[in-house]
Image 1 (cartoon, rainbow, N blue to C red):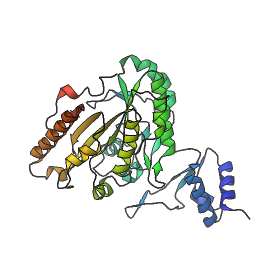
Image 2 (image 1 turned 120 degrees about the vertical axis):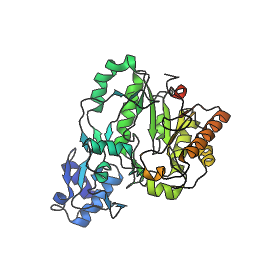
Image 3 (image 1 turned 135 degrees about the horizontal axis):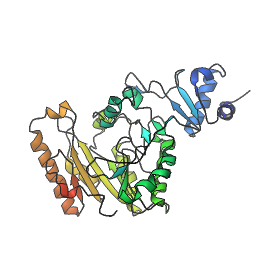
Image 4 (image 1 turned 180 degrees about the vertical axis):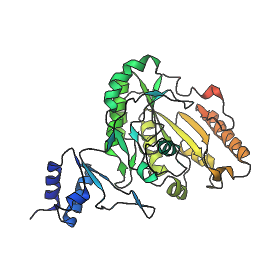
Amino acid sequence: MDTPKDVAEKLQKRYQGGSVRVSILLDEVDSTMLFDALRILELHAKIYIQRIPVLQERKLRTDLQSSDFVYFDSFPSIRRRTLLYRTAVEYGDFTINHVLGCAHGCTYPCYAMNISKRYGRVENYDDWMRPRLVENALDLLRTEIPKYQSEMGFVHLSFMTDPFMYDPVNSRNNPWIENRTLKIIRKLNSHGIKCTVLTKSKYPVVLTEQEYSKENEYGITLVSLDTEFHSKYEPFSPPASERIDALRALHEAGLRTWASLEPFPTPNIVQQNLQEILDSVGFVDKIVFGKWNYSSLVNEFINLEAFYTDCSDEVIGFAKSKGIPYHIKKKTPRNTKETQSLFHELA
């Protein structure tokens, strides 16, 4: 009699490189045996399960349902005509968004999700949380790097997705997205192009290896240490403490690190001590700070301008005391154009 491991091996061999809906698999294999086999494959990153819907009763699904799709040694994908482009973000240069969507489910609301929904790239929040890789990203890079190399100071990953996206179902970085991101960084670095990277997830230690440029700069988004805030506004990303620990490991290995304190919440969202947040990332080489936009709740806070002015002053004072370069973003009090070249100086 077959075991779940036997069934897993048979399914992997039969559907290698393809995808199939769970309802089809249920016609072939007993449900209990099937779910055990798929769980084995998922834990070993041999399959990706696209859960539809992602959420049920506002909770992340970890079970299997007949509506789900199983990708065997593959990942949901889209194709694009272009990849590299010059960003309008003030401290950026060129950027890459090699994934559509994000599994972190942030509810700030997420600017990237709203833009993608507006332009018909995703249908809704649940659709946004089912990421898709740009399957021809490396092919596009091969043609676009020579085209733009003379213009590029650096390339940022990413403003419209997370390059080291977390897999909350299995409590790890998404292995397919992480692998693609690492290949992209190596490709850019091999042409002498520096990368700046920003994640709300955890950095892999492999970035300390020699094939990655020492000029790269690795950052995390950190706007609160409060666990209730994390559960409500960044529900499916790893806790702040895990992000900080992973970033610190890169710092201790001699790599350049930075922190983005944006979008920073007002006290009517969460009561917190900005100094504690700054102290938690006091080891970084650069700091970016910005207010929380696109939220009626933030705008309801009394003395909004004074609050963000005080926060900016505190960030500036902390950065100067530590000798850390900083940038206060546009629409945030104390913004200055002089600091917008924060990442250009070593390019």
